Amino acid sequence: STFTITKRMIPTLVEILEEHDYHHEEIEPSDVIFKGKMGVDAMESGGPAAGAGCGGYVTGEAVKFLRDHKLMDEYDVVIFDVLGDVVCGGFATPLNHSDFACVVTA
Image (tube, rainbow, N blue to C red; front, side, top):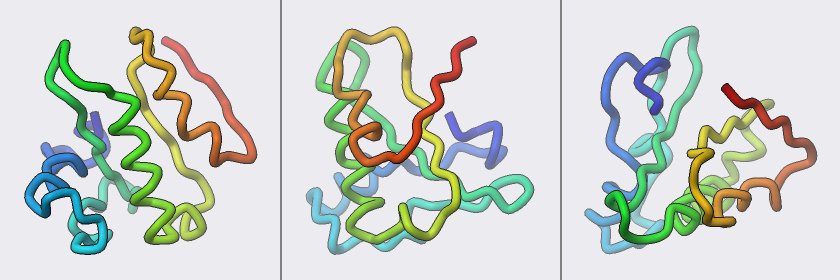
């Protein structure tokens, strides 16, 4: 969750996409990116209901949105916080678009 950065619940990309019938072109970065502590920008991807849908799909949609709006080039560092207890390989999607990856576990 981005709550620790933004100190509030922010709308997820999935929620905003649903409102626009999944048309990325109708969504602006300011609709889903919010300023957090120390000027850190945060975007909450969201996901399917527990036990339903594919979280990897959501990760792919987030990467697509960032890419289509050229946001990956706007930041020096992009961090993806994803669940580590799932079997779906789709969560590795951001690695396809990276030059470097660091895996942190707790």
